[in-house]
Image: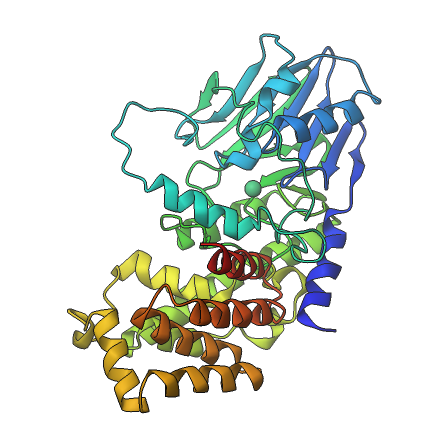
Length: 425
Ligand SMILES: [Zn+2]
């Protein structure tokens, strides 16, 4: 199986389905980047998470409406990522609906009045690349790692509603629509993560602290440090419930007490392994580039289907852990004040026998399917002349080729969209 075949096979996780998880509990998988869950209570419905667009929320709600016409009374946000909070108004239908989230819930969809220094334009560009927005489906974009390759885009970010109840206790029990739920703080992909335990059915709504892929401890669209230790510790809290049904924010539900114990234990061990092994390497003076080679998951974990690198990857986690704990400086004094890229490229080209010699080597690398090296040589050329169409075409061609070697959906999407941009600008 080629890497692309593996990534395409992973799309099975996102086949569209309304799944009955337990009596009066359903999940919608494959309709949006994220899953939506519905609990039917005495006089009304409870919704857990709401997708990234009003269109996807409408599609899901019309499926749910085949099951029941009770009004939605309560909506839970497991966390603040946009793909979980942007379809709330669809489910609310204009009614006075309670929206429940953690007390530290904070979304970038809300103007907090604080000075916003986030580089919005760059983040948007990088987000588009990560999700392959504008790529063809299914030829170019296979899927997005934790969601389907084809999903509605209309109404993105537009159905968000503010939480009306913010939960500050680490752990608390609430009753809504005749259903008793336990809420627990569980920081992971975000600090404001909340997991929801439905004891009657031994069912755990786990948000994005688990999905069937190596965890996205760093998102290449650009993100602040995600606390590795908190995430690993939250997995222990999740395990303590001894759930028999695990309803994650992405990918299909996991059923069976032993299976759930296995996936959560493996997830926690994988994160803890990255923490410990990266620290071990850092203490030996290794730089991030060296650490990536040094930190390899043990075979036992690397072989697990739920730790394949469709979304997060070990190398990116290693770099994020280094950066999150030590900052940008790799420890090598050469890199405190390095030579400017254009000057470095000029000197390297001189060493290689001139710019044309570098170009020939880049073409040779491309022909020899040594794509990463071709890209690195292209970068020397582009540092010398960013606008030269021949160099841009060469890099674009190498990106298209290397994309097919990736099982990681976000890397593939990023390579392919960037390849297109190089030809367009
Ligand atoms: Zn998500």
